[in-house]
Amino acid sequence: MSNLVNKIKTYLGRTPDFTSEVILQNDTGTDYIKEWNATDKAKPTDAQLDALSSQATTLENNAIAVANRQKEYGSIASQIEFITEKGLEAWKTNVQSIKTKYPKESE
Image (cartoon, rainbow, N blue to C red):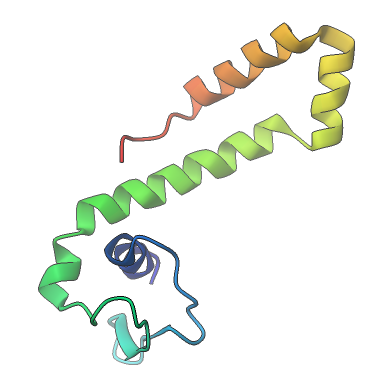
């Protein structure tokens, strides 16, 4: 359902509540929208969602990049310790190297 979720996020331009606004189901081997209660836009057609496939993939890849970055940054406490021990410029350099290692795609 991940790709369908990202297509819906792209379509709406936000993340809906998937427990009340948009309810998804997969009981036939294919993900589909069971209920559409989002009031800001009409329920999209399959063709409209398929047209967002590339943008949805970018959204998913960027979420993976952000998760990888957060893992490498470490906790706030470890970042503060890094800054205290090595200085702010060293921390900025470290952050930039992590961002380079896990780049986000253009949206």
